[in-house]
Length: 117
Image 1 (cartoon, helix red, strand yellow):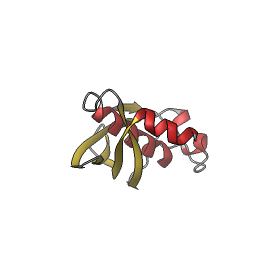
Image 2 (cartoon, one colour; image 1 turned 30 degrees about the vertical axis):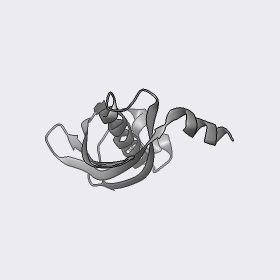
Image 3 (cartoon, rainbow, N blue to C red; image 1 turned 90 degrees about the horizontal axis):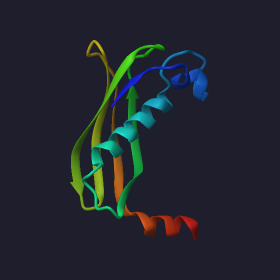
Image 4 (cartoon, rainbow, N blue to C red; image 1 turned 60 degrees about the horizontal axis):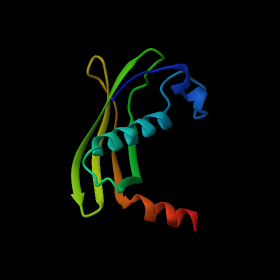
C-alpha cells in the first residue's frame, strides 16, 4: 500500500498530538489495512479476519506530503491465527515504523451474530 501524508493523517487531525506529522494511530490503521489486503483472495468467501493484536514502533516522523509505502509480510499461520510483520518505509528507503499484526480468521456470519447478541 502507498500513502501520501495529508492533513487528515496527522497527529493534530486524529487527536494524538499537536504536530503536523503522520499520526501513530494512522500508522496502526495502515498496518491493519495492509494485512487485510494481504489476505484478499486467500480466505473462503464466507470468512473474514479480525485484528486481535498490534505492536508498533514508530521510529521516524513523516511530514505532510511525504510518500510512505506500507508492507505486510505473512510470517505465521497457525490454524485460524495469522501473524504479519509490517513496516512503513519512506521514499528514500528509511524505515519509518515497524510492527507486528495478529489477526484471526472467522466465519463472517457467526462473528456478526455473536456481536449482535
